[in-house]
Length: 115
Length: 114
Image (cartoon, rainbow over all chains, first blue to last red; front, side):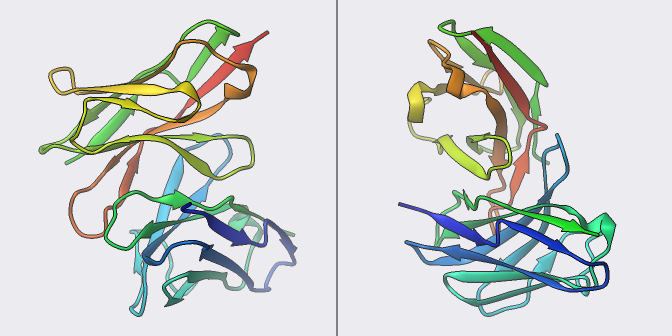
């Protein structure tokens, strides 16, 4: 149980284009989902907290217009990297918490490469 | 404020020998603590969690951790390392308020030698 999927697992795009990453909780409902970014050989950096039916809460220093988050249902959150640039290349990981629980279950991650 | 410190960035053990990954935390209240494992280019998998029940927590794949309040520690152990244990391990403390954001340690890379 408590499986989280991400799609796509890999994406390569040209600079200036937008990329959407999906995060789904497959066997539970998640009121809250989290989006992280991980640089090589580093820990995870929280970008934003996504709450179903309301606006996402962004961490300090994260541009909300650059990283658009939508949490339209209890099983799906999306992260859109708008006008991507090479510096946005990274490993993006989402997590989801079953409603009312504090344990986060992580997706397998999405590797983004912007050329 | 809460924080978590992983004392070793790299640990090397021989296959079949014990594993000890150290984690210390700081919290003004009784925390929830977690250990996650990350294999290369993968997401994080929950190994075990402490949520104020038994202080000795057993997890998956033979791992366990002991919550020691007096030492503010939550070290991860395994009696006998396997090659497949080679990965990055993260100690995490959860904030108790609001949306239960995680505070991550910097990670410990475990290498298992044949």
